[in-house]
Amino acid sequence: MVTTSIDAAAIWNWLGEIPDPEVPVLSIVDLGIVREVRCSEDGEVTVVVTPTYSGCPAFEVISEEIRRVLAEHGLRFRLETRLSPPWTTDWMPDAARERLREYGVAPPARLISIESATAVNPECPRCHSTDTEVLSQFGSTPCKALYRCRTCLEPFDVFKRH
Image (cartoon, rainbow, N blue to C red; front, side):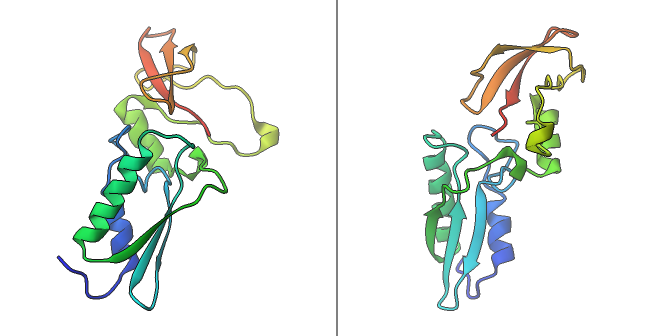
C-alpha cells in the first residue's frame, strides 16, 4: 500500500502496532519510545525516537521495525534518535502500566516529585501484596529487576524506573 497523503495520526497508529521486542504486551508507542512524528510539506516524514537507555539491545530491532512499517506504506522518511531528555518510565501511560501488571510484570512507580521520592516495594502482580523483596537487580531483560512476593512466594519481574 502506498500512501498518497501523509496523515500523522495514521503513522502513530501504525507505530502503535509495533510490539516492544522485550515486553511484547506493550507497543513502542506505549513505552514512550516514539517521541514525535512530523510530516513536512514536501512529503517527508520524520519519526523521533528515544531508546530506553543507551546500549539497549532491542533498540536496533525497534529501529528496523519502524523503517519496515514506514517503507511498507510508501513513505519517504527519516528516523531521528534523540537522547536528551533521556527516556523515562513516566512517559508510559496508565493503560500501558495496567497491561504490564496483567502480563505479570510489576509496572514502574511514577515519580510525582523528587521531594516525594521514597523507596516503596513494588506490588506483586499476582496477589497485589507489597510485602516483596528484591532477588536481583537484573531480571529477564536489562530493563527489569527480579523480585519475590513474601505473601504468595512467587517471583516476578519489575520494570525498572528510569
